[in-house]
Image 1 (cartoon, helix red, strand yellow):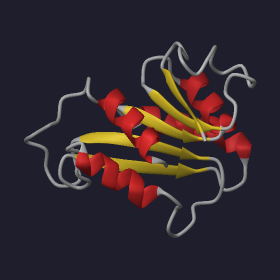
Image 2 (cartoon, rainbow, N blue to C red):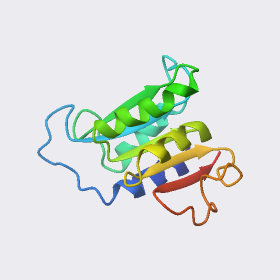
Image 3 (tube, rainbow, N blue to C red):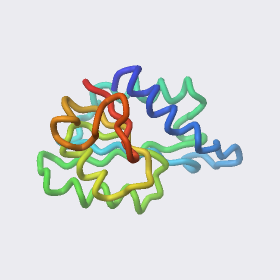
Length: 140
């Protein structure tokens, strides 16, 4: 994810107070919904984690990143999005319009930070300036 996408996710998380007393690996959960196979070192995930760290969200201290990958099977995305919701994530970062659509159909309350090509054309948001609902859009 780019720095802007990390900044958008950080803004979405500002409404969620840090759990100062959280045990290692506990606390707030952030979901990532990936449409393809999980690479060993997902591109941009280190930048994503670094950006969160700079905003005070430290993995294994006060937050956990839950990554779910569809393994090139788009029909799995709704099931994976529902799993993230059941895990009580505080925000979901989505990669691509298919993952964003699956997350949008699954929750109307959890903030979704979407990194995709054209969410307006896909009908997922009304505009990038004012996406509406629980989606914060970023055009890659």
